[in-house]
Amino acid sequence: MQKIRVHVYVAGHVQGVFFRQNTKRHAQSHEVCGWVRNLSDGRVEAVFEGEETSVKEVIDYCRHGPSLAKVSHVDVIFETYLNEFLDFKIV
Image (tube, rainbow, N blue to C red):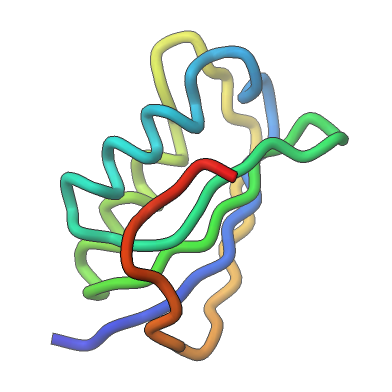
């Protein structure tokens, strides 16, 4: 299976709704490594690395987020896989 890396920006009502915690839980359950954080402009930013199908599952989760979130837009930027992470963190 091919491994990939993506940089994701999620816009909408995505802060203060447990978006980062739930993203971490989904990433870990799919064995995806990387990190997630809040940005000062109200978006959530994340980097995911792992098996292509697993990373795409986590991206799909980000398109709707937890029940209190209202995702308006998701930007996904494919990058070179670096095998940079050992786990998934909230930073």
